[in-house]
Length: 415
Image 1: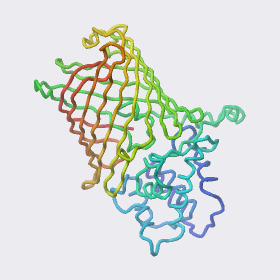
Image 2 (image 1 turned 120 degrees about the vertical axis):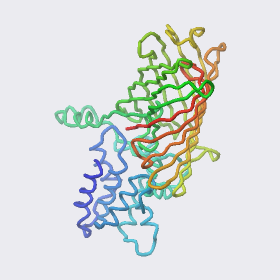
Image 3 (image 1 turned 90 degrees about the vertical axis):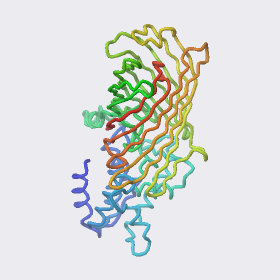
Image 4 (image 1 turned 90 degrees about the horizontal axis):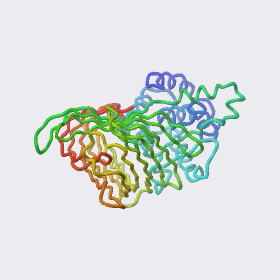
């Protein structure tokens, strides 16, 4: 549901403040939402609308403004629903109940680890209290909690004449982002941007045009396991540091007690199909540590993520990728680290991202790669579909092993 339709829904649903609340939010409203979004994460704006409807919050311009500020991401455009509730004295009881409902939802996270036919709740930081999670959510930090709906049972689909199948197919969507792990992020604000723009070689001053994007389709779910097919493309026109990677693959992931386990297998070539590389990867993203936790203090947001991974690649034909000529295969282990700091600046969202990846060969010396980058981006909101970026990158491409040191000015897009 887009913002215009949501406003109409709010107006119609909130017009009768005297309606009694006879159903529970997690027992009735969330499963009803999952019927509309089978097999995918519930959009945060839909959850907020359901909360407001369930508690019969009176329609007012103040409520609408707070709702829009919350949906925009961390209250960049004004006072959020969380800000209204935290004013304390004079807050309507039904408005204050929004936080209570979200606390009950957050408490379902531990129970849903055993699986449920209704929905599955994931917390970004399992060490946070339900109250802290609900406060973050009502202030626009939707990455603090996500609600994932199960895929409809195939028997029920057959018995209903295919209606649920059509709804499930409609819920599938194209995802545009900047890297494969971002395909699993339900909150748009937590996805990286696909980038298109200008680069300048820091050593030779040679100029080039560059594109870096990942397109996924899904997600598809079976219980707690989810998977997506994808296409990734990374291209630089630089003659000194050519980069031409086109991959077709599948990635899957599952949460096991707040440990995210994922696997990826793909076929890598180039846009002229001269090279042939098969690659498989296993990754483990552990729960946050005290030294690497997510912190939100309005209007600033700090996130820290890290993980370990192992991969194997077999190079049947390196094609024009000269860096792979001496390599027939490699088996590696390594990890990655990301630190992101963002805050509201003027009417938009300013964010700085520090990334580092390292892969070390377990057999021989082939496949050694490490790359780091710093990106400064500005977008209309934290959950915007586009951004303007300035970045610096140095190191070896993780898959094609091309050495590069570049300054970049790019346009970021995500969907």
